[in-house]
Length: 408
Ligand SMILES: [Zn+2]
Image (cartoon, rainbow, N blue to C red; front, side, top):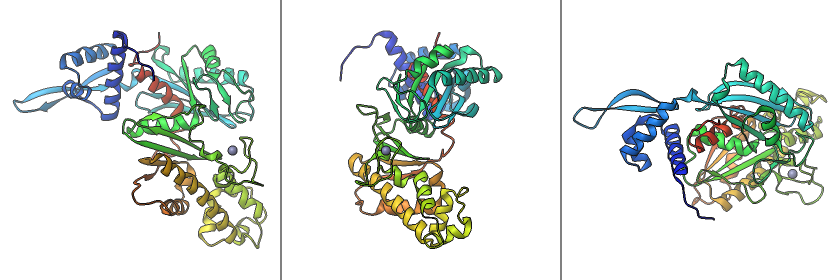
């Protein structure tokens, strides 16, 4: 850790940032209560708030009675439409372009398809052009844009400027994606791995980012990604690969190849994609009688939910696959429980909407974990809706961190 002093500009930014965070997490409040929350004098708060009201970032709302003697105070709140964050989420085969106001409400969102191994330069040009078109179509003026957030699958550099490896989303490795978007759009850009940005968005919307303790976020889509926050800070690790539980090696020999380049990773058994692939691999009248009765040899339309349903109705082959997947993911999560002792584990993704799967996973997670641990398991209440917000919220959070000052 390095120690350094704060100059006056930095103190001002810190105070403005704290005021924004408190108002975002706790809602509107009087200057007096804000001063108490920030441990500042009423005179200091009056100055900070006055300045932010003057800019239009905060606004005065209704009057409330407080204390005795009939004193009345005005509530202060964030003017959410003062600024917006733009975002681009880049996944394998698709990108989502969107914009949100300061409270995370969506202004626009559009998903476009990309080829796998998309050429980076051409893709950045095309996505930037469409994004700026959407900005114009939605009447967003340039001076209201707080920044652009990029959320991308794979490994980003420690400084968050370069994509080390997007595992097939972009063709290039070690590509300076932030610079490329900045050059195309002229907008300050910030970048994060997609799962970490989902966790940040989850904490932003749940307004529990400042709670102490660790939160572990598991996202199951095609693969399995995860992210960890400790006391509200997203943990990256030395090589920005913290919490990659999907790539824990669980099969020593003969495991299925994984997109990360290894074989036998946890996600090659426990991800929705792997479960479906395994079920398709054994589809037959003998091994998977219920699935066979429904699909015959044509498994093209089969989804992971069909495999869960067959398992819950006693299909022997489907049950073996689902049980193995649940036990494998459970093992990974129990390791996290014993290693990190998190307060909360949040499950994000369509798979967790399946009551049968979720009940199997919950039972598995009780097995072998002593009662001294009090980890809460929670299906994300923002299932599916974080994807269109996560990248934009990177820009909104950065705006709040710099005290709500718009770029020049
Ligand atoms: Zn892997």
